Length: 424
Picture 1: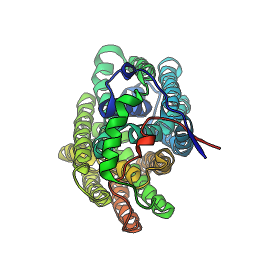
Picture 2: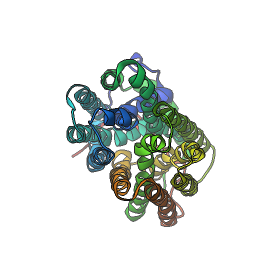
Picture 3: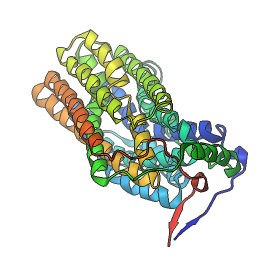
C-alpha cells in the first residue's frame, strides 16, 4: 500500500518561478553544483600542477574517485529520492558539495587529499543526479519534459564552462583557491533556494499534459536497462576523459593556458545549445530517441580520435563536435528512460547514472594511465574508441526494447508533486 504526503509550501517559495520553468532552473542549478568540483579542478589543472598539487596521473585518479563514488551512490540516491522526496536529498547533497569545495580551498596540498575531497563531492553528484531526474518527472508536464531534461543535463557542460571561465580569473586576478570559495557559496545558495512549488501551481499543467499523453505502456525491461546503462558508461568514459584532460592536452599541443580554457568554454556552449535544442526537438517527435543518441556518439568518436593528430584545428573540432554532438545527448537519454519507466524515475535513472558514473570513473583513470605510458595520441584514440563502442551498445539496447514501450507517457495527476513514496 502506498500513502502519499504532499508538501504544501506557498506558491512564492519557488524562487526561480513556478511550474516547469522553475523546476528546470532549480534542477540545472543543483546538478551544476554537484559537478562543479571535478570540472573546475580539471580546468584549473595547469595552475594546480604548477603549485605541485596535481600531476596528470594524479588528476586521473582524483577524477576517477569522484565518478567512482558517484556511481556507487547513484542507485541509493535514486531510492532515497523516491522514498523521501527529491528536495530533501538535494538539500543535504548541496551542503556536502559546498563543504567539499571549501575543503579544497582551505586544506588541499596534494593530489591524495584532492582525491579524498573529490570522493565526497562525487557522493553529492550521485545523490543529486537521480533526485533532479525525479524532480523534473514529477513537476514538469510530459509534453515539456524533453526540453526540461535537456536544460537539466546542460548543467554538465555548464560546469565545464564555469571551469573554463575560471581559468583566466584564477591565472590573472585572484588565484585558483578563490574559485573554490565561490563554488562553495554557489552550492550553499542553491541549497537555500531549492523548494517544492505549490501543488496548486503545478498540478493543472501536469494533469492536462498527462491526459493528452495517455497511460504508459510496459516498463523498461531490466536487461535492456542494464545494456543501455553500459552504453552510457562507455560514452561517459570517453567524454569525461575528454573533459578532464582537454585543457592539459591543448596546452601540450601548444595552446596558451587561457586559450585552452576558452576552447573548453566554446565546447561547453556548443554542448549546452545541443542539449537544449535536442530536448525541445524530442518533445515534438515520436520515438524513444536512442537511435539519435547512438548516431551522435559515433560522430563524437571521430572528432575525439582526431585529437591524436595533435593539430590545433583538431582541438577546435573536438571542442565543438566532441562536446557539442558526441556528448550532447544525455538529456534525451534520461528523457527516454523516464518516459519508458515513469513509475520509479529515481530508481531507474539511478541505475543508468551508475553506468555513467562507472564510465566517468574508469575513463579518466585509463586515460591518465595511457597518457603516462604511451602519450596523448594513443590516449585520445582510446577515448574515441570508447564513444564508438558506446554507439554500438546503445543500438543493441534499443533493439531489446519491446515494440509497445510507451514513448509519450506521463505521470498521473495524483503523483505530480515532488512527494516521497512511502511503502507499508
